[in-house]
Length: 285
Image (cartoon, rainbow, N blue to C red):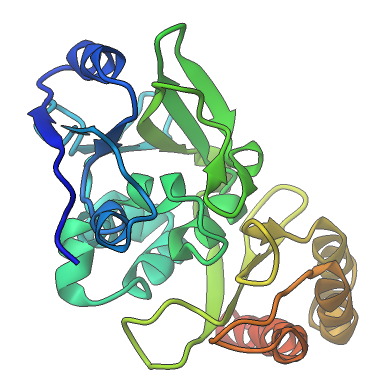
């Protein structure tokens, strides 16, 4: 199916992007376009105008902030994030999730911000961002906002973004730096395809709670299982089976072409337990 007719605009500033959106009803922002273009072809999205953000200065940058956190600009590609020295050193679990997303050519075009703005329950980078307690910074017609990543997702394809609001950057807090993790992912094909089910088990070097457990493709939104994390904090690897059962109980999977709900339930338990044990072995615990 060919693309529908629409108006394409290049914004040079955030203010200009907001004005371009306001001038035309049913406008949409775009950075990489790897989600939006297939949706246009399928007819599931029909904007009259597309506002391109990748020409806005600084939005493609990854930078260290004065407080020790790291900022990922809205136009920074997934490949760029995965290759960044600061991200690789301080947030390796995000690197693992980035490298699981699609193919190499797609990662050079797709953005981490776009991956979460699509609000898919299987968005690979969201697993790490939940574990890292990232903060989403937005600009909108009314005001700027800082949104904890746990409050960002509302349902399949639905985020908390308001009309005309765009994500400027994602902040990775210093407090969650230095973690290690194991990202287990099952898909119909080894690469490229989206996940049938995915589980990220991670542990931070300091603070409480230390453990993180993020699930994808088994609920209406990417999911963090706090009760299972508490078990792992208390019992460590000996609590792997208990954490796996809690993870399974937290899921509300569906039947679709990629797998049945029953299969997803089972694999959440398998991947959780496997992730806990593999991570414990890798860090010598």
